[in-house]
Structures are given as C-alpha cells and as structure tokens.
Amino acid sequence: MPIPVRNFLFALGATVVWFFIMRPFTPPNIIAFELAGTVDAAQAIISNWSAEQISNVRTGIYLDFVFIFAYCSAFMYASRAAAAFSGIDFFTTIAHQSAWVIWIAGTCDAIENICLLNALNEITERNVAIAYYSATVKFSILLVTLVFVLICVTAGFFRKITSQIAKK
Image 1 (cartoon, one colour):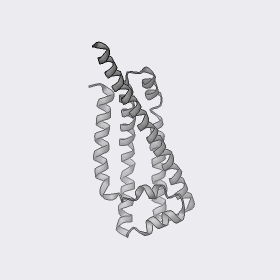
Image 2: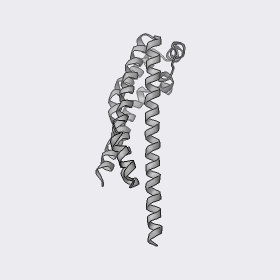
Image 3: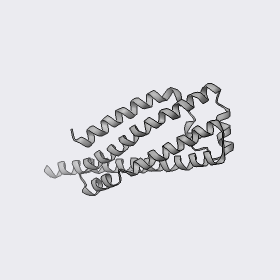
Image 4: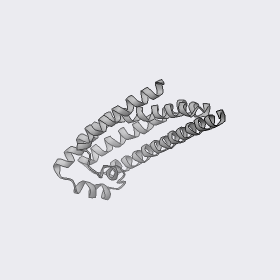
C-alpha cells in the first residue's frame, strides 16, 4: 500500500474515532452557532441551550482542538493520495505544494474555537464576527480541497479505464 494511502487511512481512522468521541458533546446546531455572524443570531442559538448543553458545547469545543489535527491530516493525506492515484504530475505537484493550505483551515478552526468559547461566556460582536469569518474561511478551504480530491480520483479512474481500453 502506498505511503500516502496508508497515511490517509490512519488519519481518516483517527478523524472518525475522534468524531464519535466528540458527538455526545456536539449539539445539532453547532454549525449555525459557528456561522451566527451577529450577536442576535448567536444569542438566539445559545438561549435555546440549557446550562448542561452549554457545558457540553464547551467540552465539545475543547475536544475540537484535537479533532483539528485529525481532520487536517486526513484532508492533507487524502489530497496527496488522490493526486498520486490520478497519475497526473500536475495534480501531484499541486497536492504537495499546497498541503500547507489545509493547516490554514485548522488555524481558522482554532481561532473560531477560541471565539466560540469566549462567546459562551459573553457574546460580543467581535467574538461572533471573528468566529463567522474564521469558519467561512475554514469551510471554504475544506470544500476546495474536497473538490480537488474528487477531481483527482475521477481523473485516476478515467486514466485506468482508458488504459484498459487501449490494451484491448
């Protein structure tokens, strides 16, 4: 098994395990809280949570700091493995030269987490705005990376199919 694939599978396993560890502490509207963007929207979300739920959210956010390393590694290695699978040198070069970008998403997630923890104590325009913009950048990077992985995998399948057709 190629090293990028092995690294991806390990990071994916860690991501899935940590996701299930975090799940009991994560409310269904956590993404809405991350993207609230205004004091009123954040207040409306928090006002629907009990004291126990707020405590769980706080715990979930602390657990998310570890989750960042798992999912960023999974995305980085998925990008590298998919690019290698594509067999296209250009994709491989892009995957290796832009792998650091996924860590910007992780940094944005960490900044967002700090702001959300602060917002659980005191909702300010600064906390919700920084959380909103950090989450937006994070999700954008993750989406672009996912699209890149899908393009690479699709190219790899086309390459394999066309090479088998050419052999016939």
